[in-house]
Each structure stands twice: as C-alpha cells, then as structure tokens.
Length: 142
Image (tube, rainbow, N blue to C red; front, top):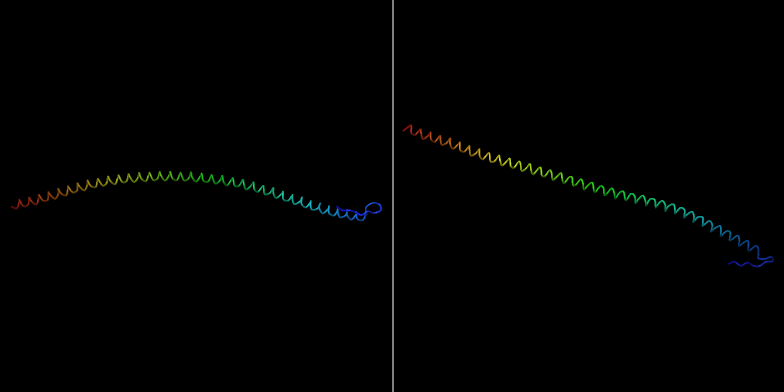
C-alpha cells in the first residue's frame, strides 16, 4: 500500500496525482487485458461450439456408416444364402440328370448285349447251316 507524504493542506498533491495516474494506467491496462481475455473466451467458445457440431456430425456419420455396414452385411448374407440354395438346386439337377443318363446308358448296354447275343446266335445258326450244307455236299458226292 502506497503512503503519501503530508503537505500543508493534506497529502502531497503531486504524489497523489502521480499515484492516481499510475492507478489509471494500471487499471486501463488490466481492463484492456480483461477485454482481450473476454474476446479470447468468445473465440474459444465459438471454436468449442464448432468442434461440438463437428463431433455431433461425426457421430451421426459414424452411426450411418455402422447402419450401412450392418445392412450391407445382411444383404451379402442373403445373397450368399440365395447363391448357396441355387447351387444346391443346380447340383441336385446335375446329379439327377447324371443318374438318368447313367440309367439310360445302362439300358443301352443291356440292349446292346442282347443284340450281340442275338447276332452271335444268328451267326452260329448260319455257320451250322453252312456246315450242314457242306456235310450234305459230301453225302451227295458219295
């Protein structure tokens, strides 16, 4: 605390005036600093609000991305199941067609074996008839 020297009519005016001037300068300096701090606070509040807005936007975007991801996974699983079902149907058809073709081939094999037996029997018959003719030729010549 400042102490003033005494003068005739009270304190020394020059000292008091100097002190008041210093106080005014100091007060104005503090007031200016306070105004600057208030401006800084206002700017920082604006930035904080902007960052909060960006954070909210990012959170909403993240939620949308998660929902989209879940939906894409769901659709992909459904498509995979459809592809698997289609493949199973195609595999069953292919197996059934193969079994049918195998049965037809077996039937053809059986038919060909019968035809071969018939052909062999006819050839045997023709050969026997030819042998009988040869034997008959020997009987005629004697």
